[in-house]
Amino acid sequence: MGEKLSNFSFMKHRKIYYIICIVLIVGSIGIGLLRGYNFGIDFTGGTMIELEMGRQVEMSDVDAALSEAGVEGSATYAGENNTQIIIKTSDSLNSDDRDTLLSTIEEKFSIDSDAVLSVENIGPSVGDLLKKNAAKAVAAAVILMLIYVAIRFQWRYGLAAILALVNTLLILFGFYGLFHITINSPFIAAMLTILGYGINDTIVIFDRIRENTAGHAKRNTEAMIPLIDKSIRQTVGRSVMTSLTTLIVMVPLLIICGDTIRSFILPLLVGVIASTLSSIFIATSIWYDINRVTTKKSYSGKKSSRKEKEKPAKGPVV
Image (cartoon, rainbow, N blue to C red):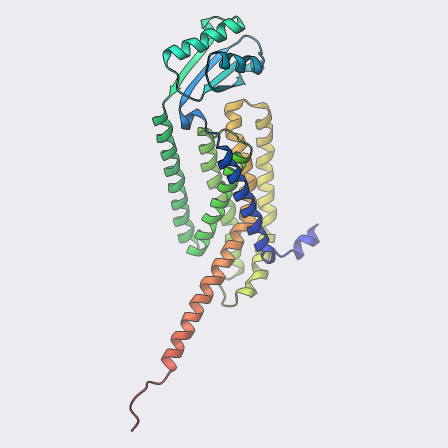
């Protein structure tokens, strides 16, 4: 395994990485858009009711009660031994509709009004505001990271790092669209965490590339391929082991914790895997291609300028 890795050229297969990412992102996001993304009431608005049932009830019976009350929504288990349920409706219920739903549930499951633990209404305007704030938070994080990496290294490194982060977030959005998982506030928190995790992983690789390339890009970019491959091989073990230790902690939490923690851990788990792969395969490939294109343009511009200086001026023949 070590011998195969030492002979593997990461840059040689970079076009394959691009194709795989494009197919995954376009396919999964396309399916999500066609079916419709599953946004939670944090974004769409609605009513959330938490009930203590005293026992674990069948979700099919809860769905039947919702249909009987004429309410569109879903229910999930909560609490110790799943004796509680949380009902989330698609629309914000007024007092009459809410009373009708609670009366139906109380009658169907033989519980009283004391079983209602909490009722929360979220209007559509609040959901729109949350979407805007989430977009602003992500945009601010990306811009600040771009500035930091550009100052710490070069603008080429910064642009490549940001594009790799965008690739990670698109894969995450595609995953949620493909499997129709609910997108809510913990998802946004996990997404911002992934941005920080991914940029840190990418900087480690870029720092080693800068050391091995003596801090500057050579004119012969083909000669840099072995140096980039060497840099990735020197850091890939650290990147993989860091991700594995993180995943070892998150997998048990995903299994044993409740829905609230799970809604934060799941995007974090997918994001850690995607950001690690993006740092190793995508960020370095994008940096190499950006460096190759800009170096050629810069070199050709200097060459043409030199020829113009050497070209003798035309004048009248004496």
